[in-house]
Amino acid sequence: MTTNARTPQYDPRAERLRMASLKNWGAAPQSPEIKDMRQDVILDCGWGRLLFAQTFSSGRAIADILRRERPGRRDIAFYLRDPHVVLAQAPQDLFLDPSHTFRLWFDRYRTSARRPQGFFVRKLRLPEDLAPLNRIYRARGMVPLPDGFLEENRNSRTLTWFVAEDADTAAPIGVVMGVDHVRAFNDPDHGSSLWALAVDPQTTRAGVGEALSRHLAEHFLAKGRTFMDLSVMHDNTQAIALYEKLNFERVPVFCLKNKNSINEKLFIGPAPEAKLNPYARIITDEARRRGISVDVLDEDAAFFQLSLGGRAVTCRESLSELTSAVAMSRCDDKAVTRRLLRAHDLAVPDQVEVDSDDTVAAFLDKHGRVVVKPARGEQGRGISVDLSDLETVRAAIDHARTVADTVLLEQFVEGQDLRIIVIDYKVVAGAIRRPAGVVGDGRSVVRDLIETQSRRRAAATGGESRIPLDGETERCLGLLGLTLDSVPEAGHQVQVRKTANLHTGGTIHDVTDRLHRVLVDAAVTAARAIEIPVVGLDFMVPSPFAPDYVIIEANERPGLANHEPQPTAERFIDLLFPRTRHVPLATLS
Image (cartoon, rainbow, N blue to C red):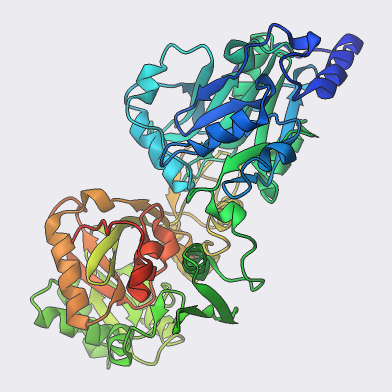
């Protein structure tokens, strides 16, 4: 973060300029106050074009340009004085964006003495930053930058990018873009704006968004700009709270966008009043985009019915009527799943049902390290991983029996936890799942670090991912010589769980496009063996890019929302209502 930016004092003249700026925002270029402003300014930002509406004399011209938006882009007309008049030019194609505009007046900005912990903010590096930044944009549902765009604009004085980099991994964990209005259109108000701020949802670092916002603000402040504007969705309370903390103020500035598939959720109207979880909502949103009606039957259990043209399908999240009771029972019983997969020559770990102390002792002696799991259950409940002494195994068996009467001992397999989603017997997504962890700051106890990380994970997953403060977490900490009251050193990473389930705080990292072909084939074979049209298969692998594997489990109701930006919901609706398919079926199988 910039440390030498000045902190101006209150200036009555600046206050008068501020009021004049608000009075004249959106004025046409014929106005005497802005006679030197360039006209009809369109700025290509990579994700789309930014139209500075105050530089246009014709609302029809703005509407026509927006309607010529390129596929896969998101154009924005900003600073509209009369958005309703422009909207009337093409009401079937355009919509008023439901976002608020906030402005930071630099004469009211105050720098912060607090510095980023575990990361730093730097300028963009080319070309190595493009891929990781686009990964972050896709993870946030934003439009990625096209190949070559950053190189073409590397010397731009209008566009500026800053990147937050993790100090330990050197991986980008956030990005922001700024626009200099003076360079863009000779802005008489000496303004600037912030765009495309995105933070990696998997990062454990706190304050990344604030650091990027401050860095950009101090960059424009040093250049002598008067203010910085940004647009934020009206219901993004977390972001709005951050901006208000930095002294941003709401201003009467509006923008128009084109009705396209990217913006669809902003103009198709409100979702059903029922509060569905993210795993159901991703499916119902995709159905509504295709004109399929949604009837929520039980919001607590996430049951809903999809209907179109006389056809109705009842679902519970990604479990639908197309999955037979036989297939579901095969997935539900982990011992049956393993026997079925082994019969189809798929690699599975050694396993035994717990029926006596002698069985437990013999299995532990044979393998040295084991997994204890209930024969039935989901979301990682009752599972204990990497146990090596008999007393711990016995305690884990008692815990597993609170979930299911039958308990299994399984050979512990070293490796990475890989979830592969198969829909209609085609691989749609693959992701490495990593156990929950926290990063020490040298001050906080592990308990507080876990609670902070849990809030962050819950915010990123719609409340679905939290790290339990339970006996398993205490056991995992004990293996590291720590307790919930220990204070890890600054920068020290602490793995607080062994299992990588999202519901226990795990994180997910997409590897779909790089999966080894052997893993793809094994996943499809497993789905066909179970005879299930939608399934999430859990692999343990040394690497998702190598052929070695064992299949641990099959989940008949996988969370499709965990695998964005892969088109899991699209492929699910394709399966249920194939005539509504509107994109090529792009899968690995």
